[in-house]
Length: 351
Image (cartoon, rainbow, N blue to C red; front, side, top):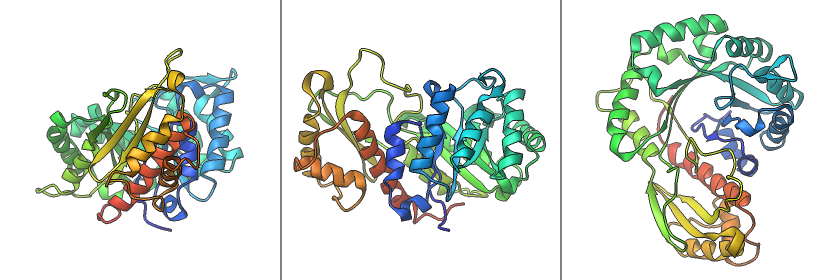
């Protein structure tokens, strides 16, 4: 099986499931997504839909990591079953090879549920460390060892993720130092199944007026490069992870009564190009055809051959396909982003 070079963190939206369903086989073999199950899917019906979406979009050939970060760690479904166990039973019924995720502060009920799934599924576990966990390395080592004993797993079964969530240009250098110190300070870090570094430079609010084209620096990618190329050296270089084309704190769904503006977010070597249209409720989705045409005329547009998302953009620019709804553009933009990042990071020797 191909080496994993990218761990995209997805928000469990329909457009993102469609995006991973449409990546090429080569790209799919090089990624392991982490699905952050949204709050709106925390009841039985929503959890069953998540499982069915993963059956359709990901299948049963390879592991996929699941986290309930946004859901109460003590939530019970239908009176007597922990939300994690309920979801993983749904995933098992759909033949999805799911890996549970936990952190250092999920609570006794959640840890017990994770232990149940680890012992039943035998797919390992993901331990997701946040920035606050990295402040005291001595205490971090104590807490990790305690968690490993509780979960009854060896390091070789663990995907260890360091997730800084949102990062900004003004604090990138200090963040790199924090991560480098953590990697060099965590005991036996070379023994873990995978070491992953995650962050996001995508803004929570996209500024710009209708018709504008803006560029946003991919600070998350630059930060990862700074870490793996650290002059003082790393014991182990982490594999890249990001939040794609959304901010980590993006709401699960659009606010009621607020109509989004049409937009295309296109990933390039060091930036996202954001083409912004007008409010869809007033101006419709046909405006995506004009936005697509403007993108296709830019030197940064790679071509219809590159990914399924690029192909749709090209056809939309030529008015072969309609503008479609925002969900479809989450699919197009995410599909292009994943394909681009896999090709971009494949040349770097990491864990």
